[in-house]
Length: 156
Image 1 (cartoon, rainbow, N blue to C red):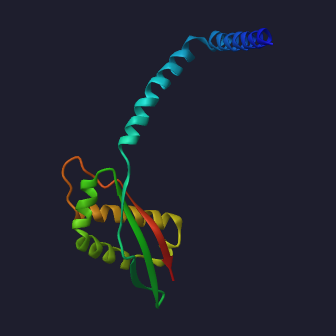
Image 2: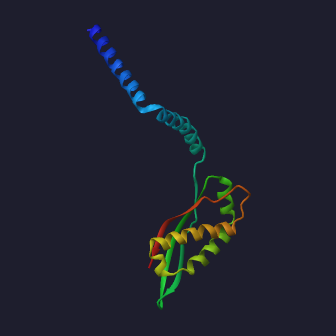
Image 3: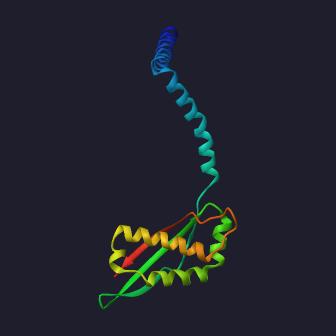
């Protein structure tokens, strides 16, 4: 029984080795260099991503503003979170929260209901929110607010 097990293992090893050799032989030299480069870069990129963990700050409470649309009053409720890879940036936004909230309330109350009804309008507003925060909060050189996310968006 032991001899049979050894023979089976030897056959499996030979077949796997032959298959691997055939792959490298048929793949050619150019593909080997691409595979080697990709393999060499992957661990470095993974390590870099692990070091840069996203930090989120919710801008609570949710923003509620009203604006006029076709002669009637409309309401907009938004929940936001800002994201950075640096705690110092998040701390700076938090320290300037009154100025940030004031700027955003003025921005939201000046929006057009029809534009916000489209995906493009929402995305444009998201970018305006990020720009508005960057104008209010002055970060040190090299620091930045990476993104802003809507976590709630209700129009009525």
